[in-house]
Image: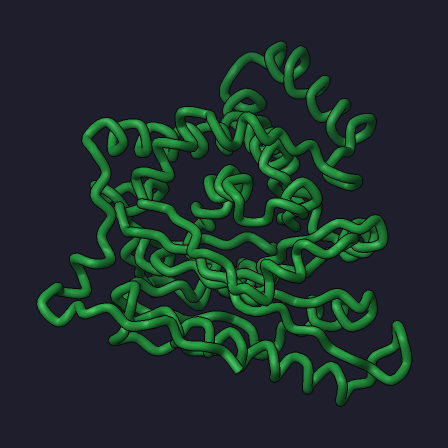
Length: 340
């Protein structure tokens, strides 16, 4: 059973105040600059290819894509993690301060298991949020004693499209990301790696709603099946605050769902800091981890449908308990986690 952390007395403190980060003016400026820099890098290849002379695309974009798509496919192997960069880069530190990002001490059960030789996990984290801003800046904090024994082996499954964008690709690789294909995940686990997955994906990204905690999980069982086949413990993880990074709108939700389903492209309608669609509001962000869940099956490597469904149900219950166990202390006592 999950233990509930001791509740703090916040009867005189509005929840909205508890949830807010308090970045300095410098961190506000640098955090906003960093977010827009990422947006520019996403648009860069289109600008170079279509708005500038063709020579730019020929001498820059063509060689870049030739190298990254044919000769240097690090995202299909073990990635290209750069710990010093993710820990000390000034824009990462400013962005972490901007949203007050912290990681709550992990449960003792997870800490004890993490110490074991050849320990590995599948860490499933929720919710996605409008842009998943926290994921990129969180990586550097994992080295601060969170997972002292396995941190060097952690890889994050990320959407394939991220590795097609100059600069975004590099940032993804340097922060431990690899392609989210099943074959890549299986190879990583076979090589003793720990993987972090975001099961909700684009569907969860699209349903993100300001002021509401909801995860797209009812039909997402692939990560559980992978854990059963490889006999790897699953760790639930929840990120408090990321649902409130942007004020969202359901405008044109029908067409946007069609685009997501048929083109695998998510188009959130969101407004963050100073109305920006790409810079989050300064909401205090806290990452919490649950206890590792170990599942047993009768036939190794071949879980039955009933075993899969039961393991998935156990994970959903563990995620809800994790949320409920921390929500009062973090200022979210008025919310309920909705599993869709």
